[in-house]
Amino acid sequence: MKKKTLAVLLTMVMTAGMVGCGSSTSGNAGASASDATASASTATTEASADAAAAATSADEPITATMTVWGPQEDQAEDTGNWLKTECEAFAAEHPNWTLTFKYGVCAEGDAKTNVGTDPTAAADVYMFANDQIPDLVAANGIAELGGSAVDQIKAENSETTVSTVTYNGGVYGVPFTGNTWFMYYDKSKLTDDDVKSLDTILTKGKVAFPLSNSWYIASFYAANGCTLFGADGTDATSGIQFGGDKGAAVTDYLVDLAANKNFVNDADGAGLAGLGDGSIVAMFSGSWDYDNVKKALGDNMGIIAPPTAKIGGQDVQMKAFAGSKAIGVNPNCKYPQVAVALATYLGGKDAQEAHYKMRNILPTNTDIDVSTDALAKAQSDTMDFGSIVQPVLPEMANYWTPAQSMGEALVAGDVTHDNAAQKTEDMNTAMNTSAAQ
Image 1 (cartoon, rainbow, N blue to C red):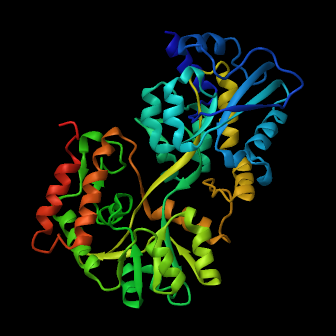
Image 2 (tube, one colour; image 1 turned 135 degrees about the vertical axis):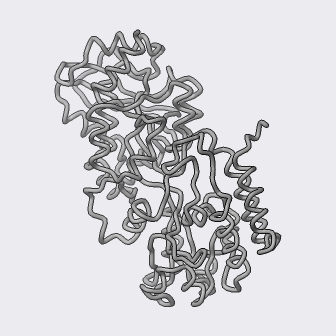
C-alpha cells in the first residue's frame, strides 16, 4: 500500500527519471540545512512514502540536502559550472525551501551501474542515457514521471524526443539533449540539391558511411519500412521485422552500395581523414565529431539530416537511431517533491539554454531557436523527421550482433544479389533469437 502511495505522490509532484554516481562535493544554496538529507538515503521505497506524505505541497517550508550527480564537464569552473549554477538558480526560485546541494561526478552512461548497485545510496537527481531505462527500472533506481512533469515534457519536446524516455507506457526522465547522427559534407564539392540524395552524392565523390557499425546500418532498413518492435518500438511481441521483401530490397541496395567505387566503409577514422585530405565529400557522424570536422573543412563544412536513398526504385528517407540524455529522480529519495521539481528545472528551457551557451549541449526544447546554428538544426531535423527511436526494450540486445555481422559481410563482399534474400532472413532470424537460447 505504501508503494502505491508513493506512486500517487510522485504523480502529484511531477516525478521524473535519473542517473547517478561518483564522489561528491558540497555547496549551500540556502541559509541553512537540517540533518534531513535526500541523498544516500537508506530508506526504502516504503519509508520514502512516509516521508513524502509529511510534505506534499511545493509551498510548504522544507529544509533538505539534495544530492545531484552529473558528468565532470558540467561541473568544470572554466565553463561556468553549469550544474551548480542551475541548482542555485532553482533554489532561488523556491525561497520556502532551504536547500543544500551535494554534487557527485558521474557520466550519463554510467547511471545503470552506479545507481543500480545500490539505489538507496544513490543521488536524488541524476543524469542518464535513455537506453539505460529498463535496467534502472529493474533496479528500482528511477521514478516514473506523472502529472505536470509529463505535461511539461510533452509541451516542450518533439514526439520523437518524448518517446526516447517512454518505457512500458510511462515517462522516466526529463530529456535535455538528443543523441543521434546526421551527415557532414564539403560545401565546396556538393550543392544544396546534391545532399538531398545519397545516390546523387555518390556520383559526385567518395562517401564514408559506417556500414559495419550496427548503430548505423539500421537506417536503411528503417527507411524501407522495416520495424523494430512495432511501429513505435515499444511492442516486444512484434519482434524485429527486417526480413521479407522489404528487408531483401534493402540488402540488395546495400550490396550495390558496398561495391560502389565511391563508397568507403567508415572505420578507424577513414571519414575524418578523407575530409581532411579532400578525398571524401561526405561522412556520417554526430555532434561529438563537430570540432574535428570543422578543423578538417573550415568554412566549407556543411551539416544536414540524413539524405534519402533509392531503395527498390523509390526515394526513401534514411532513419538514424534517436536517443537522448535526460534528468531523472530516485524513487528512494526522501523529498520527492523537491527532487521532481529540480529534475524538471534542470531539463527545462532556461537550463537548456544555459547548457547550450556554456557547453554547446544541443537542446531538445522546441521553444529554443536553433535555426541559425547548423549543427543544432541538423540534430533537431534528424530527431524530427530523419530518425526512429532506438527501442529501449531488453529484447533490443538481440539486434546488435546480427546487424554488425551483416554489415561486415556486405563490406567483405560475402553478400551478393544471389544470396541477399537468404542472408536477410538469416539476419532477421538471429535478431529474434535470444542469445540465451
